[in-house]
Image (cartoon, rainbow, N blue to C red; front, side):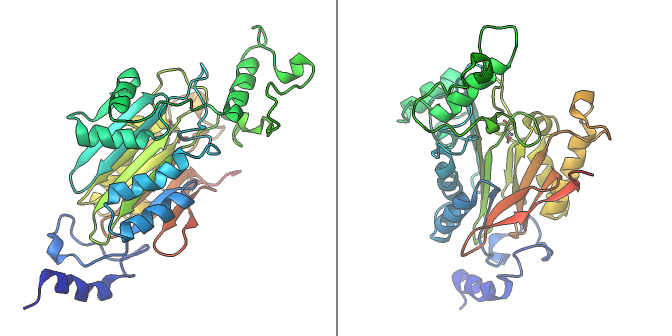
Length: 366
Ligand code: ASP
């Protein structure tokens, strides 16, 4: 008699490889697990997630749960003081305080958890997991989120580094010519307010677009049985108004996972993603049969349509900001897309992780 395990083993050889990358046939969403063949696990993340996807892939290949694997991956970036967009070392808000946002979704159990405006905890994704697992709630914010984190054993630490404090001090001084804060030039000495010898210049006050720096990590993982999970974690928009919440901790905006269909997460201008229910839209478009890349592009067209404010449009009426989506479907097909060309995402399907080009709506410089 053929056991279920033998059946899966036999069918694995047929489908592995075919199920990876673009263009393989989709199976019916929600088909019973026994009819599914095994697929090659995939970990996909934003471009800053090279180590994260390698770690997540290894973990899921060793049998870890997909959410544990994804969170293990992003924890590396959350703890890295040199990534200025996530966790420890993330850029602070207008008051010089680092406020973090994160959400997680666990496909098999249909679980979701999130925290917003969380201060002092290096790994907000782990607090989001605790919200999902150990409370009857989905989203905790601010002081309440911190109190909950402490009650679960998380340590409160100073998340500002000298480098991010330096940037914030200079940004504060540049805000207005009529207040009493002096920029380095106005101070006359060009002096660095710190003496640790690690001044790396102030280039990061603006991104290459001339807009305020942003950044986030999203990571989505599928295992060989087709189970999916995702996590998004960020320090959000630099110098934001205290209390501002971006898309990252909003289920359906910065992250969405439906274990029958796929997973998606976002980085970029959170306000635009929230207004269009971005990641949920991508998953719904995949449900209707679109490939991950096509679904991401279609959701980005909605972002463009929703960009009604003249201040957010360039001379040709296109958004003057970027949004990125990263998606994987139930068959392990994956892809990323952005409004503007030049974006890349990190992915691991075995061996070394790699960066791939995101699809896009508009060519930079066009
Ligand atoms: N999406 C994040 C936010 O709006 C920032 C980013 O990804 O750049 O908070």
